[in-house]
Length: 613
Image (cartoon, rainbow, N blue to C red; front, side, top):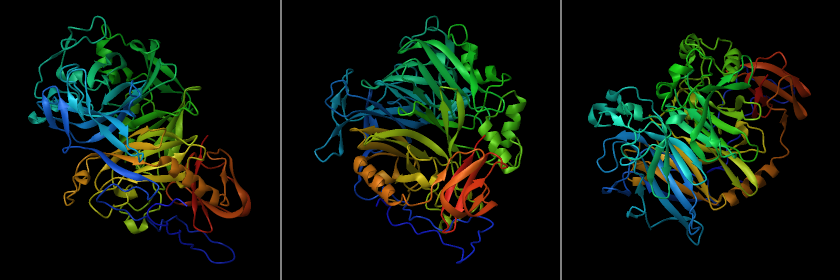
């Protein structure tokens, strides 16, 4: 059976023989063994490799060699046009620093991957069209599009890659950061370095900070910038998805709670993203479905709207989410899945957003109702975040899997940490292997209280990467642990190679001052090989556990069924018991508010249940 590090200690049974009693509140009583000094992956059949280490490996720039940047985030992918290698990896660096060779601001690093006889990876030497030779190459923004700010998420599509300039900047003083960021704060002239690709825009002078916070297309094979996507609007972009029609692009913003945009761009012609229409999502009142509101987006005539799209959206009822992070298209079902990382107490920000004319999504309103508070109340909490699902067929957006299970103790200690816990989803991708589809969910560092991270008794955190079999119910119980990042770091970035047998993942900004290993002290891109065997072992594990109790339908609206008669209790998101059944194969939940609940059985095991109307 597939197990992480050691067999998990079973939850204690807190009932005696005969009639079973259930606690008034759920209290997790176990945790898995966490290591904090290095990346942790499950044991054999997986193989682990360090591939690219920030501040250790050197990159080739137009001005010579220099040490690689840190804060590895998104991992872009492009196939090798010659077919002689596994393809290219392009790693974003989510930081701003003054750098004479790389260019001020953020950065990206490109490298080509090959496969060794044992199936593991190697970084290949190569020579680019501009004459640079080596293994790791800085993507040249400095001489092409005018440098970038904190490169975070991105888009990979048909050997084209876009990088997202995330952290929203509103003044030159902010980007200068006392000389540690962008040293040149003079006006930027669009098209001076190379043509922008937008008629009538070249020659326009803008404030330096206004040339940041766009989606930026790059040439991954030659490691250079192509264009800033001015017609998609200026936002705190995190990620995006190009659909199979080669025209539609969905874009996700990690912005202000209640004001984070969900956007859509539709190109006039397939593959030409310089011409087309831009839309913002507006959910229908009281419904998960919505409509797309067109935004004027001709860069030559609508610059004021594109450079400040939130001001345009204000007052139009556009739906504001809570920090949309990464999104990915599931090729199996055609839906887009988006991480919404959450915010501790966003109610007061929602109050401001509502007053400004924004709307709040239904899943958020339902969560507030389940907590018994108004959505704009300061008491409303959202510590863990979730994964959303956007269905292009009906333009609906709803929660797919909620973070949790909720831990009521703000200062929860590791001895009470559950065996599986999902908090602050950030990175997201899909793995297709052995004919199966898995969602990969990766955690961020939004906080450590309320048990969001396992090492809450320490000064740092460990984040985790999870696999979710998309043929199963989206529950915490059905998550499989793929990796744990080093002490103090988040885990992010995902790309797969070799028919899904190898994956690349990043560990970003670790806090390992006492660790001597360079890979544990710095941002790191690592590889895990053996995913095909891992999936086979997971399948074998599932076969052994088929005798467990099934809970269905899930999500549900009026009742829940069990595969056999059970004694069970239902708990709400706060951990409070709300219902008990005896020797029954069903439970009526028609009177309960929408939200996340937990079913507990007499052996102490739990299943997450989503009530959704």
